Image (cartoon, rainbow, N blue to C red; front, side, top):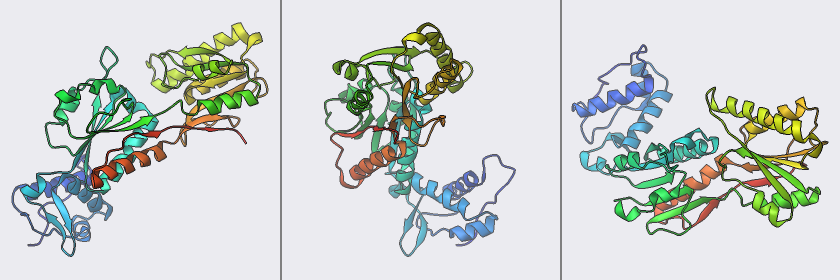
Length: 362
């Protein structure tokens, strides 16, 4: 057995990797390569098809994940039989549709997907559209689970959507983010504790002599709230909600609306400013900074500002700012470790957490 029964068309919009994947699939389906056959090496594919080694490497990573081929020591890449493919090592990640725009969620999913693909799993991401009641629709997940699944990772915003688990024929589930307070049999939990460092933020306010705080964030809340912690410390905290329509584009509208809303606030309250502004989003912070500059106010000389940030993402501010910071890459690594620990040893995470850190300006 020799030869490669297809060629690459560089005018094909599918791209080189997709064409190679499709060519191998078709060759297996029509019997050119049969179960147990050893396929040509990556170098042979590259030389015959006139592509770089990167193309067959990426294509075969996908074919392995799909269960079409497998790697055998001392043999190379071989075509798998239908029996070997029946258990296709498949993982489903259910995620709230709105959450896909989140840098943190997208990064965590990317890290998980990369790690599992390297381990030979095929990862399917299933967006769950938000319903009128604010919960995530589970219909797309039900459809995805009609085929065999090794593990379901739930990253939907409301874990309450899963409370009737007994009515579902589910694989093991790991909740990431909005994890149920009580453990459900057959499920693991990795909770996101956004407010875990509120005590450190309050301690910072005390050190700086802060008596009044204005918290600015999206209308409806973002999961982060410093109001309760500040109230317990006898520090006054008011909240300003920023409502966006996203007609121009979400981030652009967020910046513009924050600047306009906070600008109106400054026009009325410039002589009664808070001691500190806590901003739940970096892009809202851009709008707030623009309004402060337009009003001739300086940070931190005239007013202190603390932001909620994602490490390595977002705008650069004119001065270093204290911040409550999430590390999306590290969180993705932590989730990946927990997932792989289950896949390799069968142990679900009972209750692990991912949370921000408070970083002061040195």
